[in-house]
Image 1 (tube, one colour):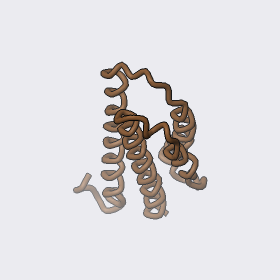
Image 2 (cartoon, helix red, strand yellow):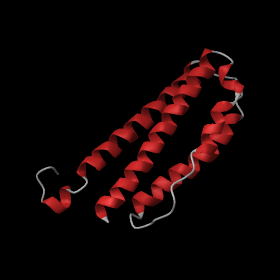
Image 3 (cartoon, rainbow, N blue to C red):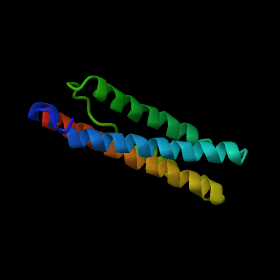
Image 4 (cartoon, rainbow, N blue to C red):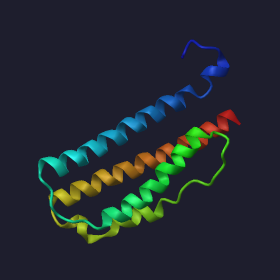
Length: 125
């Protein structure tokens, strides 16, 4: 794509960055899955339901804006998902601290993706 005409290359760096964000999110999810499966993780963390509910809203926003580039819906509020991390449940032990760190990394990458989508809309606009 780098050798394509200028109108096709426009915003190419944003697309590469988005691909990198997706890869990092996938890695964080894989790390969590490996912990849960390998360690036969049995602790119940109800805060994960709150996290998931808010993450779905963010993933839906991202999906909508990738499918429908002309949509101009306000970016999701990340404060609700970040509230999850204030729970003391994540300081129980090494595993729960690891879970918190991985979830925080996912939120960081989701925030980055939202910024990239806004940037992409400005390039196209």
